[in-house]
Each structure stands twice: as structure tokens, then as C-alpha cells.
Figure 1 (cartoon, one colour):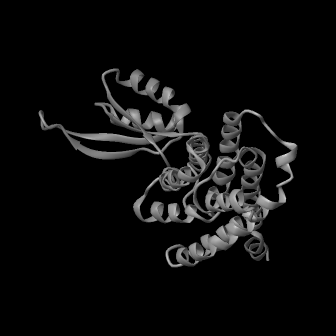
Figure 2 (figure 1 turned 180 degrees about the horizontal axis):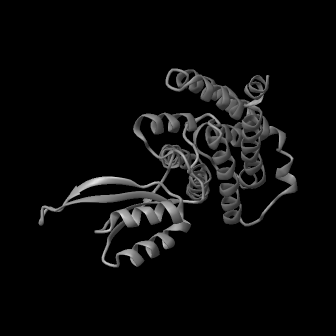
Figure 3 (figure 1 turned 90 degrees about the vertical axis):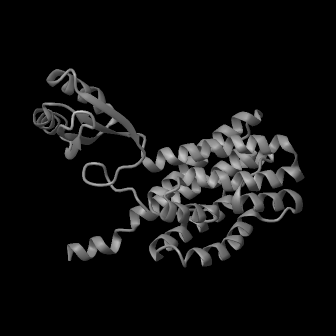
Length: 287
């Protein structure tokens, strides 16, 4: 009975977070972007252009324009992702109209500050939605397809597509609003990646030492991190060695260096950034 209950309501917290994230996007648009006639990329950008020129309802336009994108995305993405994304896109479309009153209440005279605040808030919203295995539609779905099949960064893929769209829009609305919009979009894409991947970045470390067993035991005991042995061979000496490979949180790196130095001060260490880690001890954020 307990398992059935959990299975029935397992999507409730996910849907709550998707609604929250998508709503933040609507707030960002109305409070910071639209008052300064700033543009946007993708479907929302086209909707804003038509709103500025013809006064058409942007929320309704976003929903209508997303219909063919969702039909195309249904062929490439799993059903769960598409259904959750439908919720995200619908909430975002509704929130664009629902929070329209913010245009009169919240107004920052400085355009640069508005594009920065709007970018941060919009990036947080999109990041929350992505972390919960959904999107807000538009180029987000295209970006996720690229991530799934080509391992391309979601934020950067969206940015490239949107730059093209903004470049075309600047021909009609001028270069200044386009430049401000690019700043806002870059901030949003950067914040999106931070929120989606997590702010606690990880480091991949390879260690070559004559005391590999002692170092490995110290890492396991002190840092509580898994260790993998890789078989290595010196090209010059021909000596075979076991190379230690492990992934640690950024805050653990200094302690790891201390451990290795105390055991073998002449050990070789190679440290590199790790954008995303899935598995035991690091969570599961994949789409």
C-alpha cells in the first residue's frame, strides 16, 4: 500500500518545481525585459516581436508556436519528458499573461540592470525546470535533443540558436536592444547551467605514486570517495603502475592534495574539471 501511495504521488514535487521555475520565467519577462522592449530568443522572442509590433497576446502566441515543436519533439524524446515539458510550457505561457501587472509595479530605469536581473531570474527558472526533467518548450526542446544525441551543453546550444534569431530581429528593432538582449541571454544560459549541474562542481583526479595502496586507502577512509585503479605503463622506463583515478567535490580537493603530499611528496597529480557526475554519492541529474 505504501509503495502504491508513493508511486501515485511521486510526480507531485516535480510538478511543483516545474510550475515554480516556469513562473519565474514569466515574472522575469514582465518585471525586467518587456518594460524596456528587450527581445528574446526562440519562440518567446518571436512572440515578443509580434507583441511589440501588432499588440498580439504573447502568452497565446508562445503556446500556439510550440505546438509543431512538441509534435516534432515527441518523435525524439521520451513521453515523460514531453509531458512534463508540456506542463512547463503551458505554465510559462500562462505566467506571461498572469504576471503582466508587474510591468507597472516593478520598473528599473537602468536598462542594463534590468537585462541582468531578468537574465538571472530567467536562468534560475529554466534551471529549475531542467533539473526536474522538463523544459519550457521552444528551442529548449531542440537543445535537449542535441544534448541527448550529441552531448552538447544545453545552455550554450540555446545561446547559439538564439543569437541567430536575435541577429535577424536586430535588423527590425535596432542594434541596442539586441545587444542588451544578448547580455541577458548569456547571463540566463550561464545561470541555467549552474542551477542544472549544481553549484558544487567536481574535480577528476589522476594520481601516479609508488604508494598507490596507501594513498587509495587514505582517500577511502578520509574523504569517503570511491577509487578506481587504472593500469598504466611508463613509456620511457617500461615500468607498470596502477594509476589512481577518483572524483571529489571541489571543497575536498585541498584535503586530497594534503593526503597525497603527506604519503608521497613526489607523486604526480593531474586535476581537471568535471561538468557533471552521475551515480552514487553525486546524485542523478540527467535527463
